[in-house]
Image (cartoon, rainbow, N blue to C red; front, side, top):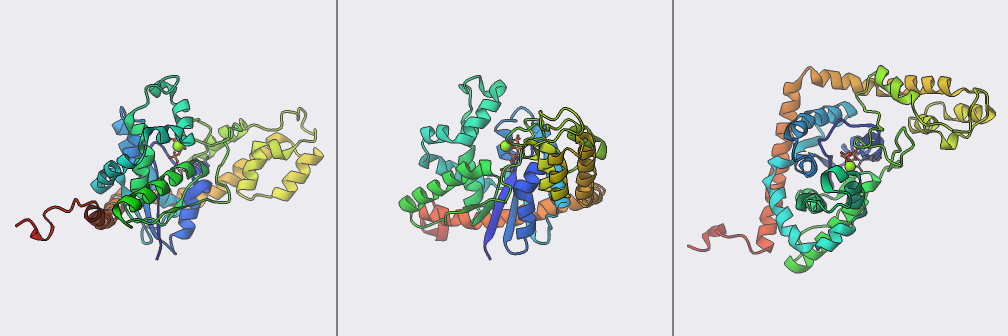
Length: 338
Ligand code: ATP
Ligand code: MG
């Protein structure tokens, strides 16, 4: 059976971007793959190092969201990155195989540094060693458990490419040790924000969360960007530039009728938004029901994390044994020095 390794940073709750960009794929694939889902707390600390309590709290939020979304602990291991020291060890060995210039060229890192000027300076001059290097630790996350397939959103492609480069270099120097993992994109690899921004993102504040209440969803959808040319209720409009239609399409709600009515001018934006609120609430209802169950059973969540972490650690230890042999770091094995 092939192995899936993927995960998210515990920096907040999961939103529709995460769900349609990658989590839904993991739910669908977990029955056919050995599935490991990483809660990347070490990576979250790279730009939240001053907020350890936020990261810790969000570990549980993320675990709840995974279980709510349909990640089945009988078929998937959910685990905590910082509890697998082998990943940190492998990151150090990998850091010799990547130039600093190569890390600066990574377009996703560049984008993120631009978004985090408060933390890293206007021109990114204050970027930390840890943040610049997080794609290297991501390579260790994936290969440290012998991952084959990585279901992720589009913004992660440069990181997977970086992982593949490291694997090739490692194998060339130390002998065949790792396979090159592959990204697995969904049919909707980049979900836009309600504000029309290219990406729905926690940091951009334009997200609908899986756990949002009807009230929150209503507030957000009512402010969503529609065709600016449509002034009056019965003006015809272009659904292709409307975020409300975009989300109707995403959850496959009454798409043909909405498109036709919008173009004909027989559908007002307010009614269309109300219909979207209802459709989203219906879509999210089973997810939220599962979340409520687990919120009432946090002891089960804790046990799931503990078991998942144990399984992941076991695997990482096996991989690191191989790595240490190939790197001639396997001291004191077989009592060879006695
Ligand atoms: P942050 O703002 O803290 O970076 P984020 O919303 O960008 O948060 P991440 O935790 O960085 O979320 O991303 C986790 C996973 O979700 C990645 O695989 C990423 O590609 C995917 N993802 C996040 N946002 C989207 C989106 N809008 N569309 C598709 N995939 C997404
Ligand atoms: Mg991100």
